[in-house]
Length: 408
Image (cartoon, rainbow, N blue to C red):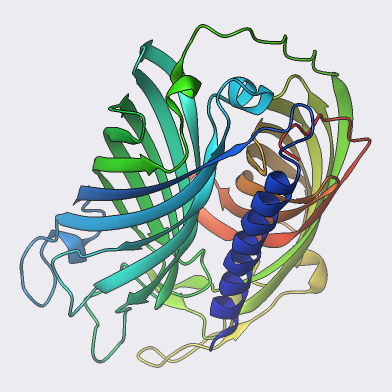
């Protein structure tokens, strides 16, 4: 099993174990004041989708000589949420979280495969449209396996998928209809992205947009919990404060180098390591903003092709160590929910070795709560909004944390 598969599986396993332990801990504390009871739910969904034709392989340049346009996936989800009208439910809009399995087909099993996805997810209510209808969101993040990747001899048309295991990222906006005491109906729009995080070449990725329709069964939701006439205690005032996040991360990446006006993949995988330290101003229960000092070493930065005879494969060399180091400053914003925080960052390298490192970079990160003051960090860095940099897999530590944790 390759190193990238092992690490992704380890991350997903840790996430599942985390959800399980938090679920058990919350159940053990149900009798304490303001500790909400848990509601358990399962859901089945269907998601038909349209594939964005970003590459010639998807347009028609494939073995079938047919456009690859459609996708379809059934999903089976388990989640738990918090008792209606509890602090957690009111602060975070009926938040729920869990784990799921999905199976995908793209109409070309031979060249793409029919991958299976395992993912963690979280969703919540954005607003009520009626007493039994709400507008919700949901994100999914996980692994997908069973792809048929590019191979120079047996699958040379497929320049979209480069590895058998790929990251799965999804965002849903949907309407939730309360049908009865036990059943909800969901329907909305779904956006999906598959890629390997630049750990293998090629890494164009595959993107879809489509519909989602689902039926949710809630095991222990009582009719009384849906009543809106209830005496509620005021939500405690949020203690605004500045906390400090330190993240240590590492990963690996592949590199494409331009040789004679075409991109050639380097045969080597290059190490990446770095840190991020930033003060974050906690505005309220859901939002924190701040700045961060970002330092990293990228073993692929400024790699170049040696002189070679035309028609032969080139060899690659690395520059001096200082041309693969960078120090940058970024603005950060995070959306905070129980157990998870989703963050974005926009920054620029202020000290660097030039070349590849002279860039404006963007960061998308998921922080998974491990303890009150530590978290698992799963991030991805881009530069100039479209070119992939590297994964950011690591651990984070939070100092001066005064955030109230009603879900624990």
